[in-house]
Length: 109
Image (cartoon, rainbow, N blue to C red; front, side, top):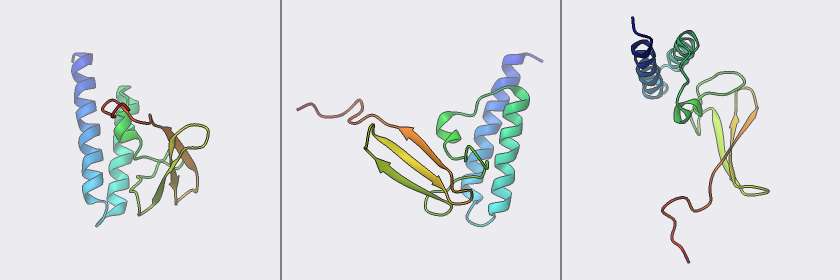
């Protein structure tokens, strides 16, 4: 099979599994975690990166699926550089993601 086709299918499955994990987390958190584990295994097996907007939903340390307000805390900080701090309430570790102040569509004074 063509390698590009395999990577494309793997990427689609990863996105589908993580979307399903997001929808089902409220009722079945264990099944949602299983979906996340499967998505990670598919990514590693096929050497496909998980997209950044989905990767931020997975704890870097304990690999649990993060749902803001349920098992993670999200805070905005501006000291030194503006960033978002996501704290996993399962393992207690913090992840920082920088963001731009203003962005593309910001009004210019």
